[in-house]
Amino acid sequence: MAKVLVATVKPFAPKAVEEIKKVFDEAGYEMILLEKYEDKNELLKAAANVDALIIRSDKVDKEVIDAASNLKIVVRAGAGYDNVDLDAATAKEVVVMNTPGQNSNAVAELALGMMVYQARSQFNGKPGTELKGKTLGIHAYGNVGKLVAIIAKGFGMDAYAFDPFVDKAVIEADGVKVVDTADDLYKKCQYISLHIPANEKTKQSINYKILSQMPRGATLVNTARKEVIDEAGLLEMLEKRTDFNFISDIAPDCLSDLQEKFPGRFYCTPKKMGAQTAEANINAGIAAAKQIVSFLENGDRTFQVNK
Ligand code: 3PG
Image (cartoon, rainbow, N blue to C red; front, side, top):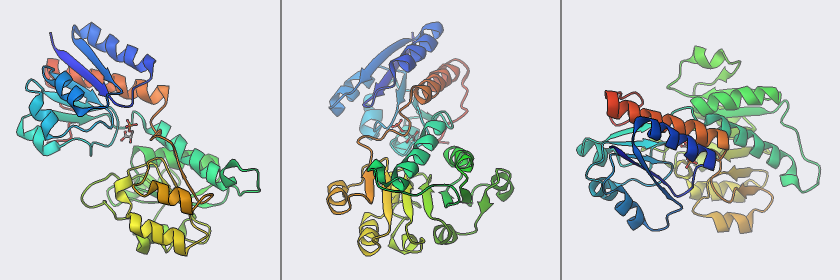
């Protein structure tokens, strides 16, 4: 009987856990649940004998891969897999997958919700502004970026996108204008919504130089990863440009500094909550469970990211 560990510091909604368990019950697998663990040793111990692992933003490094000597597959129930050591997994022939698109709507809705929150003076009762007619720059047009564009159109925003990996015609088909460089996007847009993954090319790429081109009263929205922002540059921007706002779903390292120095122009959710909806948890959780069964039973490697 195959054993699957569902290890989530930030647990799935109970309904999602129920649905994941159903998939494994039907396959005749044993599911072990490790939620809200505080010590990495708990993960190392729980992973020791399992064939498969489902995680969220939980870190799966070389130590975890080495400790899990029976491990065949890790599925990151979500989009970004920068929390998994792909080289360590590949070295042990462990397949790593994500579940692209399954939690995207939740993240996209939050991005727009955060824009409304900032536009309305963080709900302090003072007059704010509207999103209608404002320019929105979508930095990376993947599953989340596309949904941000669709929702933003409902608000009457004027959407632009920059993504060198997506065909221009695909973006334009959604009624979104394509710009040729990231600089053009930041120059043009009053709101920038970040949807780039964290990798060697993107880390710290959102720096003072690029931000300083944004128009007056601009707002940067980060529902992606904290690593893509150069925090020294962000601080410089907030200090020099008193019209600039930054709202984030991921706590930056300089969180307390920003909270103290820039009230009203900075906001961060208490916990990363972009994908924290029942729907996103159910969709991503079920997809992860099904991908595991399909891989273990039929060798199906769709969505493998460590090829
Ligand atoms: C993702 O990459 O799917 C999102 O950042 C959500 O992450 P989470 O599952 O840790 O909430």
